[in-house]
Image (cartoon, rainbow, N blue to C red; front, top):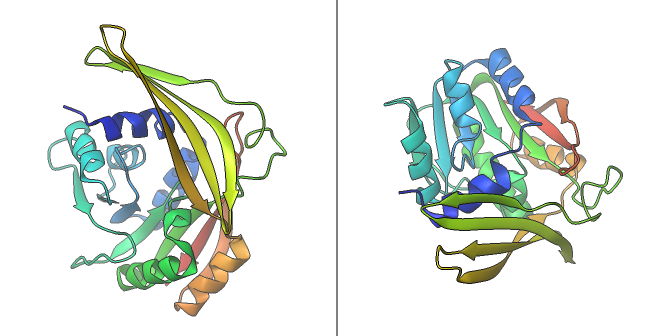
Amino acid sequence: MISEAAIWHDLECGSYEADLDCWRTLAADYGGPILDVGAGTGRIALMLAQLGHQVTALDLDQSLLAALSQRAPAGGIETLCADARDFELDRQFALIIVPMLTVQLFGGAAGRARFFDSASAHLAPGGCVALAIADLLDDENGAAGGEPTEADRCTTAGISYSTRAVALNRRDGQVGIERRRELESPDGKREVKAATDWIDTVTAEQLEAEAEAAGLTVAPQRLIPATSEYVGSAVICLNG
């Protein structure tokens, strides 16, 4: 049975498709094996595996990886429950992807430095580390800080789930995406929860400088377009 964490992850992240072309193109350019960092329930890992790539999915939440494994073909995707800032595998990857602002969840420059050390140790010669970042306060397209989004909904095992982003909050060095989550049981009982994801603020220039300090080489960026619900993002590309 899918966990509640996986249900929320699917609702809040699963419908995002604006970045898929970027990851498909990078996978075609660099080949495999591929490491998907912050893979969650498999939004990107499953797509890449279906295209014939060898994919390892890394996430800190075992329940999300369990949902991914249920959806993957037998033996199709290896999963690794580990902290992206400190992981060890006995192999290297042609492509290491860090989609959907995951690098902005690493706890500032110190956490990112730990990740770059781990990624560098697992990057094959000629390979690429690709990280998506965004400025959540960029409201040019109305995708952040504008009108509240429509709720995303689903029903699982008779329980109705609803989630909606309601505010962007700020604190030193971070922006918080605040969501209102609601659950309604078959007997009509309703539960409301608040959840906030705190995202580190970092520029492309800062990230590239940190990567160079870790011995990586900056390559041309890729761009992911904005949608009505999501700001656009830059994909920082780094070679070993």
